[in-house]
Image 1 (cartoon, rainbow, N blue to C red):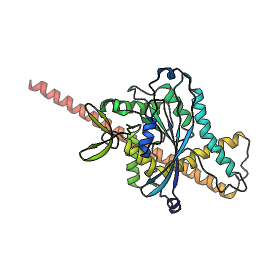
Image 2 (image 1 turned 180 degrees about the horizontal axis):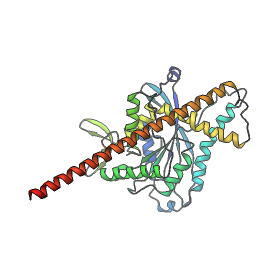
Image 3 (image 1 turned 60 degrees about the vertical axis):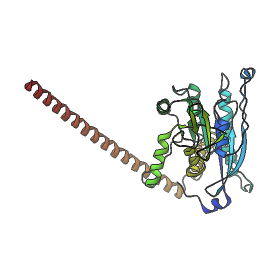
Image 4 (image 1 turned 90 degrees about the horizontal axis):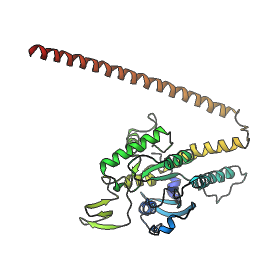
Length: 353
């Protein structure tokens, strides 16, 4: 992935992660496991009287200092208790979206200052973990609407909560249905993008492997037990244990490494270079701000570069389509030859009989 600059490594990195999902899906347990400490207390859902009380979303940022691969990381976790717990969740959508956009507004305001605040702190949300309940069916309307609304403002990473409630076969099938819904409804998520011409083979292979895991299947637990002389975090059942850090049991460890190490910088760059710039352009356009620098030579040069890049991508797309057509024709020819061979064999069998 992108090389972390020496200066950033020396002073440490900052990263903001939002956690969204209905109550009881294990968000707090996931965050505790992610940070390897008790960031959030366990919530009590045993009181049935509280279930009927309409709730509002509480945006709760908490900063945790970590160290990953020898690099100091200031991780801000934004919890959103109350999301999806009401019949009408329109206000929940707006509260979360308004919070994300408010952080962008702060950056827009800071960038327009003649003298910027030296103590300015960037609180933009770099990734949103969205917890999907393990229904085994498909995405709910709530899931679809939320991810569609926020996909243009933040890197949405869908995960299946409490994945150990599904059998391996059910989990594979559910993942497939979720991704089919995401594609059908054109839901923008973070899908580990890469460039064939710029990125190396190792990066491309890693991104393809992670993309194939979407949505990540996670299992959370604060409990530790000794198994074969080693201490592991797991969920215990009469039939055995589910180790949350075991890649054969769930995707938690790969998701954690991706968030806090391998793809952290990429998530930050996409937030700044694409999502924030898109929001900034929309905001200034609504306010009637004219870009006075649009006719400067350097901007004309950028436009020409963009035009050439678009032409290159179009040519590449045509080439890929031509290759696909050729392969399809080749497959059709092979199928026709196979049919002829089968017919010939069948005819010979009839003669022999």
